[in-house]
Image (cartoon, rainbow, N blue to C red; front, side, top):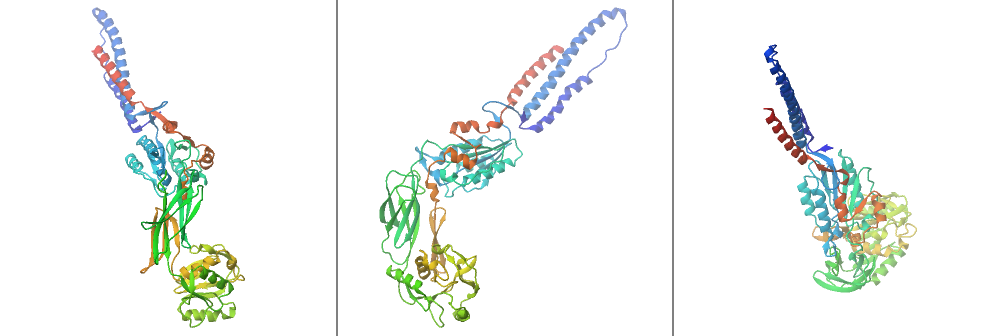
Length: 564
């Protein structure tokens, strides 16, 4: 047995009051040895025995009445089957309002069902419990029951994707650290297969994890736009999600205008290319859109298209055959035109315009090349030889991983480091000069023989040397943010939902057990409602004790009346 208000048990000390009063009221009758009064003495002894029994009964009744009233004030909890209160419990409610929770299944939003279950779990808690709420942002929210109920009711589909296994492990460790008899984690999620395919939750022993089973017995067919990227005057749209039965129409818009439409085949990872129309120079924002389906949040994805005139590029002294071939390919593709606005090659004294320079092949000429750089105001220079290693770059993905066997270390301050080898600068932009740590030759690096070499040269002459940044993608609410330098727009970030959210297929019991452990219970709505707090369920016995107190009070009154 446990008590909701154990401090009230201090009132049991009052149970000694009737006994004290009974002892204080005891008196010894006077002794009379008068023969005529012998009959009266015998009658008095018989009456005293009866009164003594009644007084003892009154003492017991009054003491029991005080004990019962004090116990009722302490609100004792006794074990029962079904219903009733529960003993103090540490509880974390995980309400997964990630983007997939906005799907509509059988005419009802998934999140609506999850919110109802979350509210029911929180509403069952008492003042003796410790309760927290976790949403898709991963933040652990504490507070009063009313505040947590308001938080659950106001939850809407978020753009963030919840790492379910990590959230459950953190929640289990949180409740396990609480010094309370009950420890539970309630998982209210659509239990996506993609959300549980990786990772494992380490749940401490003694923590009960209850998960609400997905509604329905089949996966909802849904397709979303996984990516939309612009290349060579066309936008490539990739589709993700649950398989559909037929090809889906994709509409491409620039601003408010529909500029293209195509059918994309069914299946995970299907893609289609839509040609973009000729537009004037500048930055253009568009979107790829699918027809509405069960999940609306992934039906649109923005993209950015930078329209710029082809750079006027020429090969300078010492450019090498590989650079010359790459420039010829770019001219044929109309990515560049012949000119001297950008020069690729070795350092030459007195040259002007924008440079893309590589170190001299002869180490004896490094000093002369550094002096030419300093004459142009460059703060970087070539130093000693560096160690071999692979290229790493976030700005130019085409070169990432390419092996460098020979290079010079680049030393300087300021500028932008665009690629590194062994965490040391290999490609640096310093004003209108771009420095390479290696010559673009197979004796120095494997890059010229790699498929990404021409895209690398394209990025150098059309974007890097001009100070423009690449269009990058990031997870977030779908939108576009531009990066500016002064009055010029130099780059953009395109935000979109995690493509894995488009696959609404629920996890199998084997996947759930592998990710959350074999002790997790995946329950239907009715079973979940019956199992929450099941291990510590108690009934409040205060009402029965108050009824017993009334009965004892009535009995005491009757006995006291007969005693007078």
